Amino acid sequence: MVDLIFHGGVGEIGGNKILLKDGDTRVFIDFGKNFEKERLFFDQPYLAPREEKHLLSLGILPDIPGLYRKEEATSDVGF
Image (cartoon, rainbow, N blue to C red; front, side, top):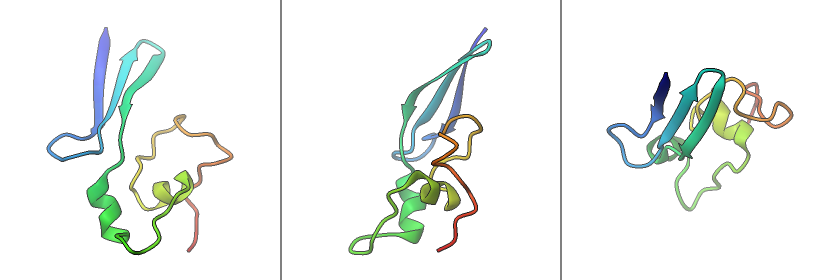
């Protein structure tokens, strides 16, 4: 059975994260950034985070196991 799992973008503008799941196969068919969560921490003219480990630690990107490269993703980042 094929499942569509929505990790974001429902009831908001931007931030679409749609996972297509069929057995052991998983494919993201859309992966957007949540602009509202990002604005809680950063807005122009301030410097916005660029690395995925920073976006993960702030909750701007979802922490979904197996989605990110391990050498890039970490949630124990200090500022």
